[in-house]
Length: 281
Image 1 (tube, rainbow, N blue to C red):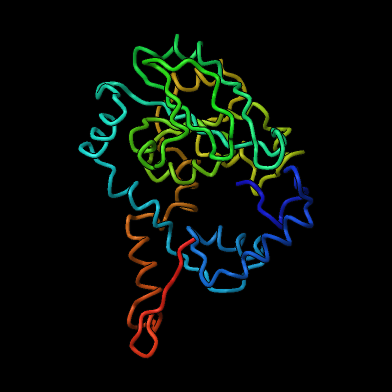
Image 2 (cartoon, rainbow, N blue to C red; image 1 turned 135 degrees about the vertical axis):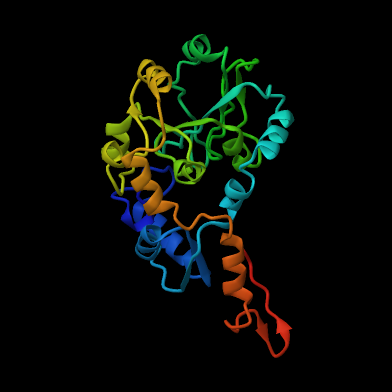
């Protein structure tokens, strides 16, 4: 959703300029022999934004196979037990992106929590557990008091497991909602700084208000009401979104990548009887 590299109007990250950032990224992209893409929409953007001319494997993301193959009661209950979440409790996952301009210098980003956790606890603690998953760029630990209702799971290594146990995703402009949509579960957008982020900070490829696969709200009060009133996932916006972005996510993406790289008919992966080495980055 967020503009990438050469498509960005300006770069607000510390310690660099747009010219330097784009040049360094394009230099790195020259090292890639293959680039995996989840859909045709992304393929077009990757080619242009990354200045990429080598081969693109439009296969879906192998990392998302688990969201199809692991989407069952047995797997979900095992993951819940790992986090000591009661089986009968539902899970809200809040996973926002980072803000380029909220930083303490290069590589050190902070997050200004706008979600009123006390209000959430009052509204949902009987039915839900709230998991907070900050972006990996956020270097400061959240200043929250963890309890039976709210947990900071930002350091947990596998976000796919968090997706699987979550009954609803709350995000903003993060790419997590593209992956989570595979589960066909509710997604809500807590976009409290929408105008600033869209117009001044990063820029979007499409209009969130028109194409988001779920309600877009700007305050905690609106978010609480949206959660309480959410009726169903199957609607026109969600169906259109899923069709455009998730059609290849069927649990077989890793197989397709392996077949493309090492399949006998491709002639890739062997040379004079020896196996070549491919690095997955």
